[in-house]
Image (cartoon, rainbow, N blue to C red):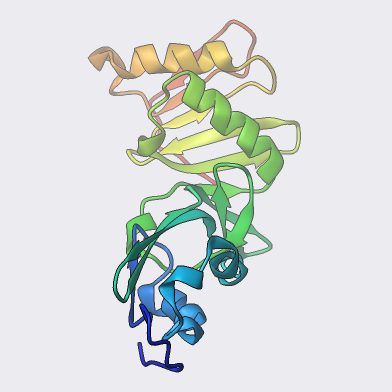
Length: 208
């Protein structure tokens, strides 16, 4: 960065950004460039936070001053768990249920897609984590107005959950997915109480 002031003691001449995946170094440094040349001793977290808070992808950060002229900023970004689609527009969903602007990032190409009802999805996601469900194998989540979810996997298998008390269904599916005898089935339907209906037919999903 170019010096814009002339502190004689520990002038800031270099800003290093680490641990960022969503935001680029260029985006972050452009907001901090005005600090160049300032005395490192007097640059504090409050000053940096005023600029960092402009980026809604960042949850926290740490500053490390490397004397005589360098400042390292370690970025902790919000964890993105899914792509949320509403009214044909894409957004990111954070693990805390925040809706964030969507941007094309190669690192997030394999995120599952959520159709409708972001609030209900966060409850579902928490339960998936509690049951050690293979979330990384999920392609899409489909919500139905009666209050239940379908889960489509990357291998085109479909899990149809009941509207209530679906934890046991999740656990049962985990067990069946490890049994090779069930590899031939495409649909696992748990909508009827205490029953599982399996089918081999190809899937048909409406376009959303």
